[in-house]
Length: 150
Image: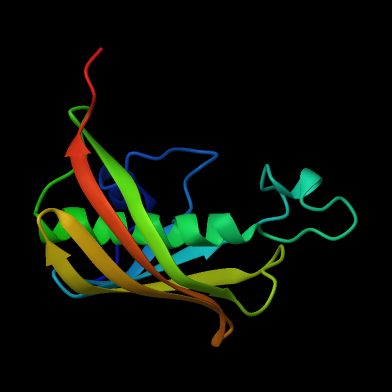
């Protein structure tokens, strides 16, 4: 499978603005890997507070971009889309490293590879880069669970 525009991304993720961290999918191989793009704009809602004198994308949001790309990969692999009966959760983050700040004007390219899947928990190797230089890496675990009922 190839590219996905923002409309197809929205069909495969429950997140919405201002928390959507994937603008486009550049490559997707269900069951294997995905490469996604986040255009980092000076208009992002977190920049006025992080930091007013030098805007830097928070590392936790880079991790969120990884998890969202992984979510798209999971739903494409399962040939499903998220719905109100399920929630896509983080289950763990290991080996997170941040190597270089991500700033307005950067294009964050996130690559996620499935490394394991067992009992509904998916493990991914993730990296994020800007202009070909790795800015962050992490191993993440995510799961899809039934949404709690009220």
